Amino acid sequence: MSELRARFDRDGYAALPGLLDAGEVAAINEAARALSARPELGGVAIEDALAIHFPHKLSPLIRETMTHPAIVAVLTQLIGPDVKCMQSMYFVKAAGKPGQAWHQDEAFIPTRDRSLTAAWIALDDATVENGCLWVLPGSQRSGVIWPTRAHGDPDFDATRAAYDFPYREEDAVPVEVAAGSVVFFNGYLLHRSLRNRATAGLRRALVFHCMSAQSWLPWSCGGRIPATEDNRDVVMVAGSDPYAGKGIEDHSPVFVRREMALARG
Image (cartoon, rainbow, N blue to C red):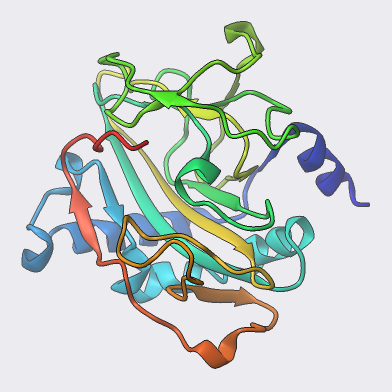
């Protein structure tokens, strides 16, 4: 087993510097800025957005980044030879904007095989001051989805917070990375981000959620399809698709979010 895979299995995450160069980072940020300004998406200045959901559906560059060789090389080590991506999100955290409380991605995107893996691409230097990721190393190993509840904390958006887990605040580790780094983490890993307390500037990130293509994806996309079906709103990023005969579907529209996320159970 590779050192990377061993570290990922132990800690639930791995931060790899320099997978994208400065030119690639700048191009992604410019593509997102152009997307947010499109009239059909609300014509929002990127500084006023919180997130762009599914930007790969309108941006050829972001779609191409899904299959970036350096990213795919890691995903195939962590997941296996056949990898599909079901979600992209471009996060914008301007100075003063809130973070997101402790949560697990698997709680929102349920899979069948525990292969859910995020590729979190830093598009600015992510620091404690501007709201980098924090993780609870090893919290993925139990395979438990912890309960969630409304938190009422203005430092976080309205998404429900995980609680009642056996980890202490002092167990949390900040993941400070330079722009162009990619943080890969397991769907069961407890993670959060804090408010951007810098006086100026953005903390931007592009995130791809991926899993093994050999497993069904019983994700309803917010109730758009029955959760018992195999969601085929996916992009193959590596290997072959054993369910290719089902075709590819389109359930989730591209949209720019300006308000805090609605609480989700």
